[in-house]
Image 1 (cartoon, rainbow, N blue to C red):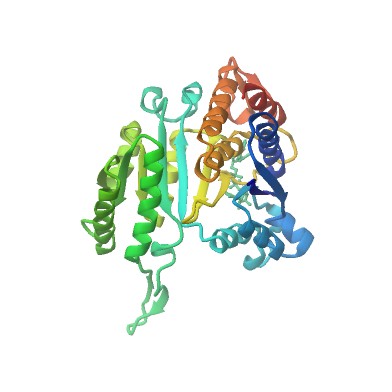
Image 2 (cartoon, protein in one colour):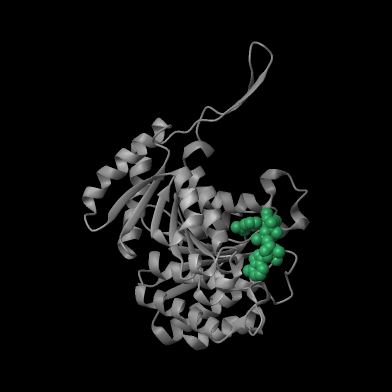
Length: 357
Ligand code: NAD
């Protein structure tokens, strides 16, 4: 039976980069037997313009019925003065919540051809390939009670609660172990178990889960050390799993090791492997409509979709190899351009990836 993919281009460069990803999916369908159906919907500012809401009901319905969602990006100056509940970003958050996407996968891959783009020495980062699995719907960002209160002495006090139940930890743990099984079978769980009881429980549950995954080598690391190791010797990591807040910080740190925001895909999965796939960058209003945006983060998001939702490992590898070939050919969009390479636009990169399949 064919799988359904909902395409949500969004705002700014969203439609331009998603068009290249759709071109790729159509090619995989025509020439490589990929059995999918595409549907299209509105999200973000463009949805607000058409339907007065950043996440129209029909978009949420289509997303709930789909096996996977491919999203470009949302946001832009035009919608910045709207009430918060109607801003484009609310569309994205609503979709994550509406689909119960609790497992956020953020790879940090540095293609050797782009090693010069990193602020770190090439030998530290060339060939880097890490996957950070971040818990996305719990922890201190959602814990109750929270707020700012006034104490008896008149001083104000801000407070938040770090809370994880066993089932929440087990759910993200299983997601991470399963991902490690599809990669190099090494998983590092990041916590602060020496200070925070909540992550003491986190460590205990992760250790217990390891018995179900005897092939995976599980290690534990405190978050402060993990941050240090990420910039000292990042290639020691394969898969990392951590809480919402630690993951938020570490995944941005890892992303910047690669030096190029236009190259990084992401996935957010539910318990059954249904996922939303999107580049990590935003809608880049400064370059929207110019045909110069880098579509590779979105194209690599399709590769993640093939691997994690559609179970098409061979096609995922084929897409990743095609991206590698295009980089070998010296084709670059402006954001990753260096001397000696040919500077080309969005569509030319998309065409080159299709040709290299
Ligand atoms: P941004 O990621 O859109 O852009 C940051 C810089 O990177 C810009 O100079 C941009 O031109 C460049 N850039 C980003 N993607 C690129 C690509 N594919 N190719 C080449 N260059 C690229 O971040 P921002 O400027 O802070 O935010 C712009 C808008 O995007 C805001 O409205 C923000 O809220 C929104 N945003 C959305 C998402 C999302 O949809 N997931 C994420 C972050 C920001």
